[in-house]
Length: 357
Image (cartoon, rainbow, N blue to C red; front, side, top):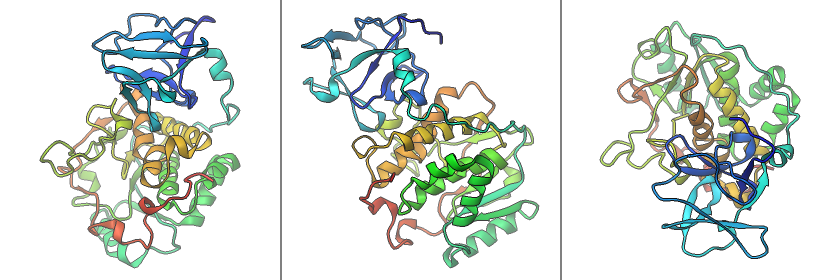
């Protein structure tokens, strides 16, 4: 989308920009994460014929003229935490927007000089299985699972990445700035560091990432086709299904069927989806605040986990080669050890400390 010098955007009190998904659902995100499609003039008149809602939006200047409200028959539009949009009956802080020139918004990106090393895209998925954990050796509770995975895939290379391996890999392939961003993730949130690493690893090397607790009932060759470049899957989250309600947070309301699973990532090296994911996670690390992203489980979901992953891919879903598959019918197993949260002395969902240091 082209913007002229008279293009303006609606900015929330978090510094995020109001935007619309392809299916007309409103959300808000930092400018590094999106290409804005809700453009207005300096008085708040929305340009073009963009279909946002079934009913029109009304933009009104508030007292003093520096802020604006956006309303419909549902009430006042509210920029909730984490990127979700809600409606309220009263116009308070989160229901107030500024109107700023788009050039001004994009001029102030905190890390705009960050150089991202682009990986040439491959057009098939490498026969490599990647798994990671902090310990130098695979913990005993996961060893049988890993042995089964290797037995079912004898022609696949298996790579286990411990904490030091991850550090070295990120520095060697992506440099100090990327490693510095990774190290900003609080080490108490091992899952968040594992999230960020898996994106970098598959982007650089390709193959199949699986959480250490996860497996596949069948050989991976039965799932992956020779021409596959990226596989995506949703949870079975409808009423009465095996994962009812899973992956349907308000942060991903704009995505039909909810979040894309990222406990498995199956992709060719250099796939652009992962480039967008990495950039999105970098933005959320650099922009992190507890008031917007939170901490504990929700913080991980929003900053490095499936919410960040999904919202990076979805706007580009029709631009690059991919295939949706049914993870259950294909034999992928989310956890072979039952309730994995009980395995750890302190699971990240119990954390109250900041996610980013």
